[in-house]
Image (tube, rainbow, N blue to C red):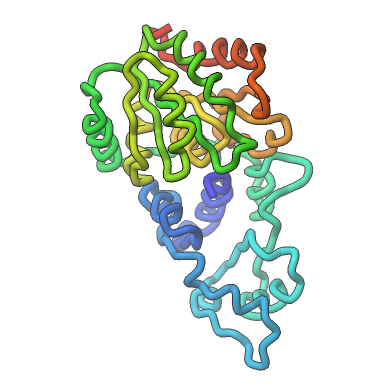
Length: 293
């Protein structure tokens, strides 16, 4: 959903007096509301869109859809019956695939709402003071002294084909550890790679245990740099304007972040390649603050 931020900004700008509601995973929708991207957060499952996949004798009634002045749906475009029933409730609704074929996903989503990839849609998201304070508390609870610059690392990802071998992270961190503090984010599915990284790394390594997304946004706002795989955490870091290096496989470059300042390196996730280690180590030097190089 973070790749849709430019499109959401364009939608909001097109209706300056209106209210922009986002139906998504509840925690993502709440985060984007807290960051000021949308005005209202709705739970996707609560909309009842599943009813539109069934050719029922009586047409489904979905108040949230029927009352909207404009509907954009990046879901169900491949099901003609769904599209027809949705447009019966919301004439003129845009129903599009969430992924394009010939351009980055974020550009495709922006095009579906009729907007061009202008710089104004790609500015970093601001982080409210309240979220920064929550992030600070998370870091302090993990052992941060509140002063030492930190590189936040996320060795996990939603699928194994996106995870760079943990040894690669460990060897890159060995090179930067003398110059900057290190923290690792451990999400609900990250115990394996995080545990392996912590066992391989010989120096101090703060562990953040599945912070709530608002607090994680605050952590990213306080971090001096970020290193991670192609993951939701990495896309959040990019959206917030963090000094970030994100590792992609060659087949996933369509999912690069929209933020202009993010660095990416293409790596192999099937086996550790010495050349990849060198490229990641070189790129991280451009991510670290000047005082830590």
